[in-house]
Image: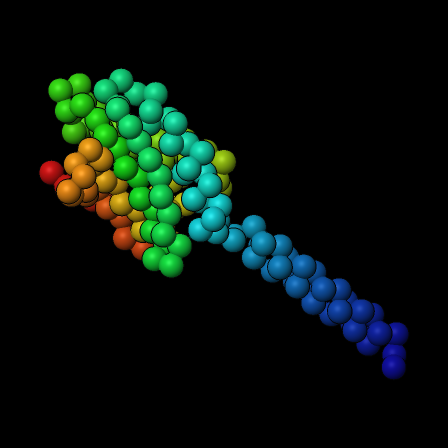
Length: 143
């Protein structure tokens, strides 16, 4: 084997090694949060809702086999209108996503999961206030 071929062979091996290292590093950095990690972030941030005036009670539940997160909110409609409720929920989701990459992007954090916001307080029926399906980033509000 000539010296030129040997250098070419070493160069090719180095390129392959660098490529594998680069690709594996990119894959590691692009992993999405798991259901449990996202659930933990949402659960830990639920107190952000309780701090708001007019909020009576809030709660969080997760249904792993459906990839579903449920947030229940009981509020006084005489103190909170629909726009304020939307802002409270958006602030809560942003707070939960504040430790995710990209920071504060709750839409991307929740994209692989379902989200349901429900009104608490009626034991017979829990009306859905807003929903987001798996694979979407839009939270659809029921008016």
